[in-house]
Length: 220
Image 1 (spheres, rainbow, N blue to C red):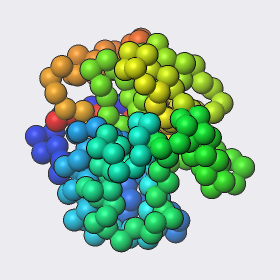
Image 2: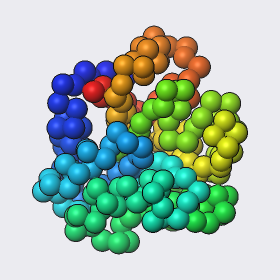
Image 3: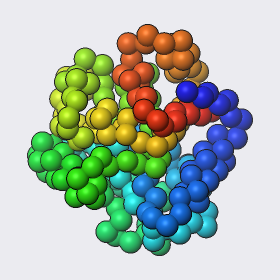
Image 4: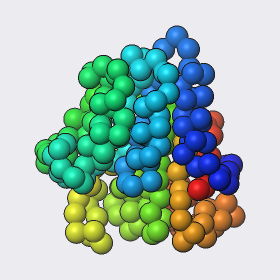
């Protein structure tokens, strides 16, 4: 686990994403995007970077139960900020279909990932994640059932404290990644990061620890 304090948060995030993409040769670069307000500026800046988008495969760590054109859709935000502005093939964007029943959407997303895993484990090259002030990441909220999932890669997760059900990646998929980059801004969240660094933290973010992979916290 590495913690990086950044005075040039967007620039540093874009640099790390583009470097990870350029380091992968001879195959597709598997990138998972996160939602929320923090990454929008990063995605907008990333759209200006010269990458071989034809070999980039994009997934999403979670989604709300809304259509893809809804203001709350993580996909819509990423599409407006990044995907519509770069030459990425439509088939290279694997969105979670928030307009479906959440369980059906989760099953369909997992099926797509397993179809690309050739019977093994789907490994992202880089997973971007945020963190809420309650220590959640993706849609792995404190006290929810998805925290205990050990086999499924994508599940519908009821979140009573939010009054909704979200679609989310689970720890088995997140912890198969080669690299995870947390994008965190705001003073209120720093105490949680420090607690995770010390170990023994009860927050959901603390369980994101890829075996054989790397976790970096970029703090803006």
